[in-house]
Length: 302
Figure 1 (cartoon, rainbow, N blue to C red):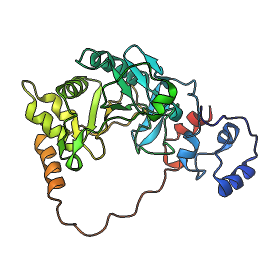
Figure 2 (cartoon, one colour; figure 1 turned 180 degrees about the vertical axis):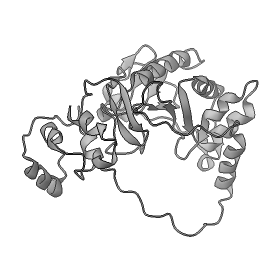
Figure 3 (cartoon, rainbow, N blue to C red; figure 1 turned 90 degrees about the horizontal axis):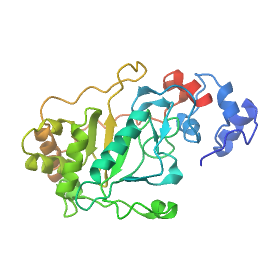
């Protein structure tokens, strides 16, 4: 899967020339000869590495600017899960994320009408920026969980490339639709109640709906954060592991259940505020290798 390092032996000068003409990815030998201040696009490095390194497990850097050492693979098939879109080779993560997905899928299998989980993108074999999609998912602590209850857990590789999740929102994310069920809320509550979890991203209407229906302890709602686009899946982000100084944590969510904030998101969807003016600033270009933690150079090379 992915680009096979070592198939082409190119000198550094030839590699740079080749990249400028046709976008060809670097070979492993070329990666190892580069320095940290080589202005190469990081996704062209990490996006073509098809296997993990042999280093110790470390989430290096921040969720949107880093890499992953010692990643492990979520098995393509498990008793209560299937990894989807195998051609992307993104079913890799830090060991604690793989364990979390396995645990959550076992819980999902206890819900009426669910056999487990379809698991979407996690991280690449060595993390880092991806060729397509996702600003985050770089350090092996993010995973997308499909909101579609599995039809069955023996899908073929071809079926997994072609099947899609099911949309759960209406009115551009302001509300849930008829596909949304109590089982979805139970699954998200279980995930958010796990101490390993830092945040969960889902469309605003789902957060508001859960706020309406939650009874008893509402502390888990704090981790459910509204965000655009998460209407076919929810995105789980784990905390940095204790004792991993290479991992840069995100600031914790604001105190409280976050329900009022989610309602503001919904109100802004239904009645968009006028443009604030001033423009959106200069778009960020693709991350360069020199913009990642220095350790990521070694992770890519070895």
